Amino acid sequence: MQFAEYGTPDVLRVVDVPPLTASPGQVRLAVRAAGVNPIDWKILHGYVRQVMPLDLPGGLGSDVAGVVDQADESVTAFSVGDEVLGASVTPPYAQSALADPAALVAKPASVPWEVAALLAGTGITAWEVVNKLKVSTGRLCWSMPPPVAWARSPCSWPSLAVRVS
Image 1 (cartoon, rainbow, N blue to C red):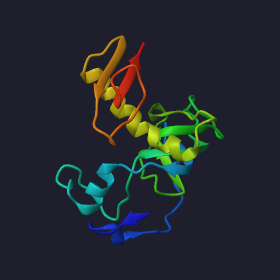
Image 2: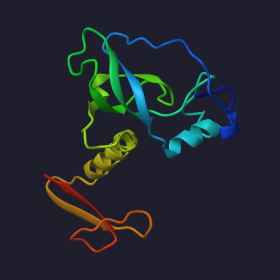
Image 3: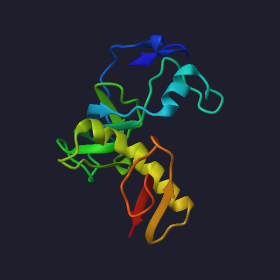
Image 4: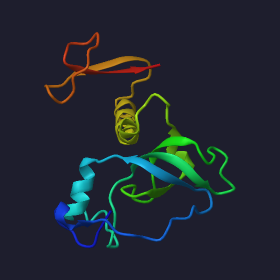
């Protein structure tokens, strides 16, 4: 899926593109699901083009879950057939996407594809919050008004709880 001009979702088009080929140090994924994040609509509308310029036509997204279907010979972390999730270097609203293996992790078999595609962005965000607050061990809790986050925890409910060990 691409867009040739900034605008509303009406400018998005399904297009045929040449097959991607993994460059040195990359893997190609057969995309099973892609995450949608708030930054995507900002990019689509052109609200961030001053800080994130795109060569149009362009695509959206980076959170991806898929199956490795091609790996450069230098890649040792993953093999063809491995199920992974993480961040892609090409837009994943597509049949295939390229990724740096360092930005991927193995997808747990019990996690559905559509959930796996969301884990990279949310996981990185949670990790950054924990690091910025300099939490080293123990539990961090803070209350959030519903319906932002509801999680049952030993903290006051509703709250968001993060365990760091």
